[in-house]
Image 1 (cartoon, helix red, strand yellow):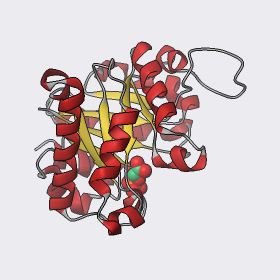
Image 2 (cartoon, helix red, strand yellow):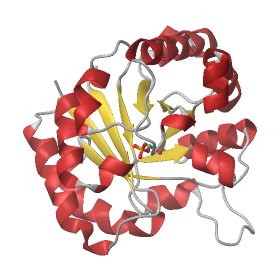
Image 3 (cartoon, protein in one colour):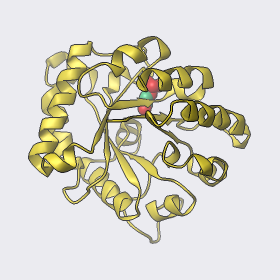
Image 4 (cartoon, protein in one colour):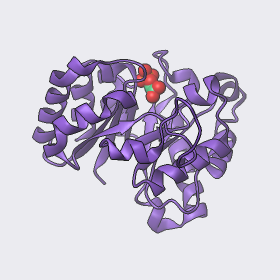
Length: 249
Ligand code: PGA
């Protein structure tokens, strides 16, 4: 399966980052269809960047970082999945831990966001992850299974999962490689139980949390890891292209 590397710019970037996008597009081209790349930018930049990279369709696409769980309505300041699609997004992250924590998003809301995104013809990247306390208690698997069961809509046929231990995000810490493999296998088995083998085999299960050029090759080689969700290192073209290259081999 061709792997998927997703950059999450969070609240960073500007219109001038077009040369950055150019570098990513050129790298994606040299990788000869051995990798899919997505950069999730703040929604105000989606149109600008997606227009710029149009010619790289399917190997390099632009995504959003969030959408509302309803289609339209009186929700001042919100952005809908249809709007993201309209301006050129192909993917959208839903349920990132920063939104689950800072914006009090529950599994139900994440579930509805994923549904709305899929209806809008976007591929939702549904994020799950345990806290450090839960990790220390040894209950990561149980937490992740619950999040998957409640956040993944059963009707959605095409989506990705981002497994991001909350304590690994932006900290430089990552779980042991065998722990990552065990959680990814659990995610795979849980999805298979919920959605069947055919749908599950098309799901990219991404690892996220302190993915860097220095650990990308090792992470790319872990069983059941189909790609990466990259925050900080997606803001630096050299770091990000090294991660892309690691996941393309
Ligand atoms: P990080 O962030 O790569 O900076 O740890 C990952 C994420 O939040 O998606």
